[in-house]
Length: 226
Image (cartoon, rainbow, N blue to C red; front, side, top):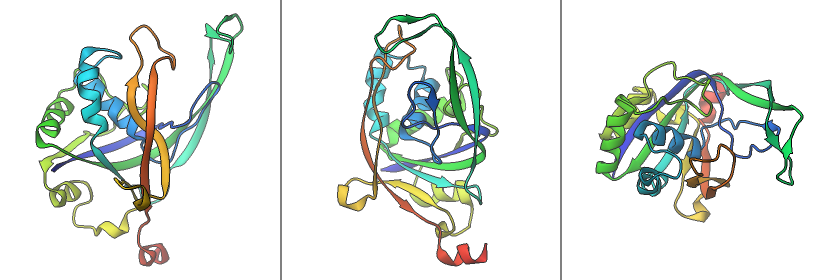
């Protein structure tokens, strides 16, 4: 097993794990579905396409660790958008405009470690250097401020060093994906099974399964220094 090191750095990011209807929230950390969606865009894997069906199980099977690089927890910004041509709960067209409220993280920076087979990670490294489609962090307005790909496939120590240098790991809060339920602290429904179909821009056909994670806070010594 090898590792891929990615840097998610941007003025705006948005990682929704439970966003529906008019309220589009963001979590404080990147979601698995958001990172896998970014990788699908880099691969040119369209919704419901043969490429998505081939690659999505491989991408979802990668074990992900998210490292909070910013010293302080990111702040949230809430904006609103007026949307036309929506549908009612019954499925019928809605002739009236709908106001949706959308949240963003401001000036956030995260490191992401992806662990998996060398051949899968090598292909991802190639497409992140030269993506087929544009990549962004949750929404199209959330454009990367620096290169995403940083290292890999490589061993774990090299991947960590590409993201945090020689700073000790325990000075960074991180969210680790775990394999055994008892090793985790929380369950997030963000493991993608399908992103839908090419004919639909809505939630039709999107499917996710739960993923078990644990939060590893930075050391208490570092907290007292702050």
